Length: 353
Image (cartoon, rainbow, N blue to C red):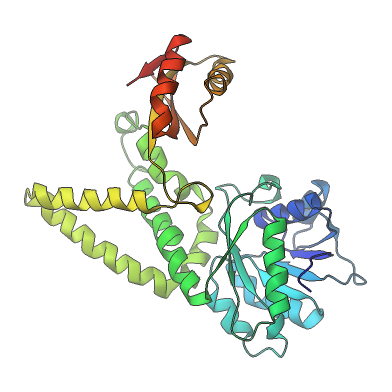
């Protein structure tokens, strides 16, 4: 059963479901689509993610990709209505497992969760490459069939992702720390901007955009996700509240050393984030380049960077509303940064050291 030959049924043709369908189709697998929204179903089918399921179809694997409030219902239905292995891609794993624990076919259920997504939602935001190189948690329970676990692992690899094995409980604590609480903190920071005077907002730079980016996600969906992981989220929020009190005391009391200590712990946290492809973090450096704001200049910068034989690890663009240029930040390995600066400067780019 560890060989995934299809068909694969995807229940829920939103961003994740349609992307899974596209990735499976890329691998040559037959994909069956199910969704309560006829519009989503037509759109996903039109994009080539699969075809609507018929009563005669017999899927080998069912992937439930619906909002958190409907996960348990759809997982139970998939277990009862077919002999397929069933997985889901929900953001929280303990709840769905508890909901199906009494099912006689629960041994065919293996939870999973791809750590990939977008601020956009719906099938039109989907892409077959969404999961490429991304971690994908696989969270088998004690009674899960080994063959079922192997089949879900094969789905992860078919979609281009890297499997990471966790218990459901450990998974929920991990995503509270790396996803759910950061999202809430980004939303709190973004909310401070809603009633800000226009002349304050005119000073917005790349820093505030970086901090608030994920806050643009669907509030209703994220409300479901956080509510489903309430215990783990509350434990971390209590820690944040205590640290916020420390920051307020340090700022209000002029305790510079305590404030620097908090900021230093933040620096240490950024360095703890795994590097490319899940490997150890490597020293990086930002190279800043002024780019004229007219067609073709960004493409020319990329071409000159390629000619410099330096790999770009990340890129950010900060538009200055008061000048006809953009400031492009190229993040590269620290040992290659000086070479890139010299190479770009020799090609008449204005860099900032």
